[in-house]
Length: 79
Image 1 (spheres, rainbow, N blue to C red):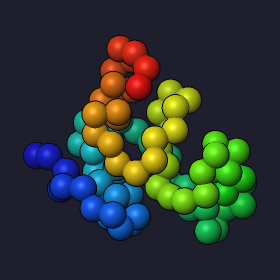
Image 2: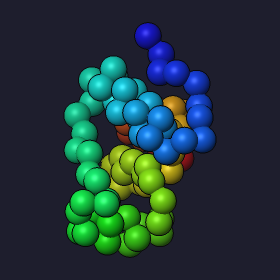
Image 3: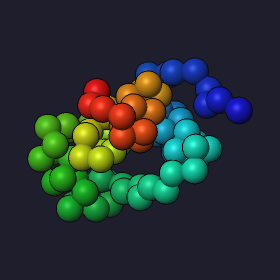
Image 4: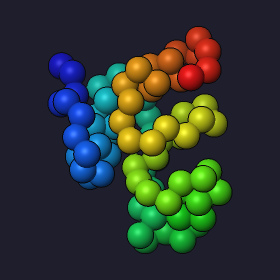
């Protein structure tokens, strides 16, 4: 089963990212920048001020980008 199509809404995009990672068998840690000042500071340090941002193998990906996720998770190269 594939995640639903792209949407501009951050919570739906967040859901798609989580759904994809779970479906593909990858563990992840979800952090809420509204409740966790350290998580927000890390987000800003990555150069972002909006969510969702997924960090895979040290590379930050804004939103849900299945192709980038697959490349980064496979370890076959950089995006």
